[in-house]
Amino acid sequence: MDSTVHGAAEIGTGWRVVDGVRTAWFDASSLGAGAALAGRVAEVSPEILVDLRATGLRVRLDSDEHADAVSAAARDLGLAADPAALQHLSIVLESVDPTEVRPFWQRALDYAPGQDGSLADPLRRDPEFRIRQSAEPRPLRNRIHVDVVRPAAAVEQADLDDAYGPYGVCHADADGNEVDLVPGDVLGEGTGDWQAVFSAMACYRTTSATQQRDLVASAAALADEVGFPLLIDLRPGIVILDSGKDLWEDDVHGLELDFTDLAARIQTAARDLGLTADPRLPRFVQLVLDAADVPAVRAFWLAFLGYVPDRRTGASDIDDPRRLNPVLLFQEIDALDTERLRQRNRIYVELSVPADLAQTRLATALAAGGRLLDESEDRRTVADPEGNELVIISGA
Image 1 (tube, rainbow, N blue to C red):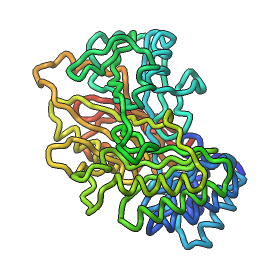
Image 2 (cartoon, rainbow, N blue to C red):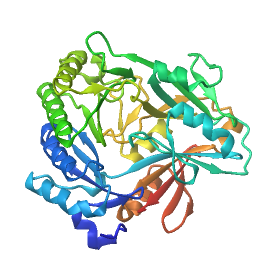
Image 3 (cartoon, rainbow, N blue to C red):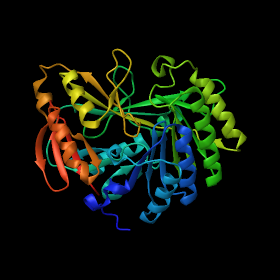
């Protein structure tokens, strides 16, 4: 099957090319309903990436030849595809000397080198980091920085320069681009397989599609039983169980449950299957945007990304409703800091969407207060109300 999307001729199939990968989202009424398809997909190929959510699942193919088998399994289970749900966010960092900053970010993120000098999450969960050459000097602090949370031992092993800032976790690369590298911890007594890395996460090694299917089905059933929207991701040889940022805390999930009890029950189910958690793997990545007018900038990104606001009073976070793309949060800066507000950031966002939805997404950005800076056949560069850039990429 040709990997290029052919416009309206393929719209009915539900599959689209997003960030170079043939992808589909299938709506489901519960984790259990989606788990049934996830198990079938694991049997088609262990290399297919599946992100299971309480409202459905995203499937990213390893080969176009598997599309028909996955679609047939979805039809058998009564699950319909929704291409409008598809988008994929990446982070771009521009540098005068990429070779100077790349090793810093590789250690901070524990990513693997990818094509064209990029850095990619080996688990394909957190956003790709694309590092590109730029001759443009930008001496002032960015208005965008990255937060990374990893297990404490992994943070120590990253061996970055001395930390600074109010929490003692901020580091800067050779160009002054900043990352808050935050150490996580074990979730709690009786949940030793789980790490608290802003979200609560357990990553289990598996040796067969049967083990993956059985763990996913058990975790989905336990989460459905208490109404918790657990995130369950299937990767080659690994199942990742994730609460989502802060959702393991009572005042965030708003349910009548203690998440640590649910985590302990899932841990027992995993161990009963003979599975062992890998404590090195949990990682959480989010973007932080500084803004003089936080409400205006936040409203733009809410509309443009189709995100939802954090339910907590006073929290500036905005979240992907399907928890497939990174959290964004906003911090206020002095509106009189005009030089910094005028300076173009070294870090910006690229958003890949299906080719047939790119114009709609551009219209959404402009209606929300964005400005079109540049447009070509498959790339549209937009600035938000304070000049933070984003690039809409269509198709491959």
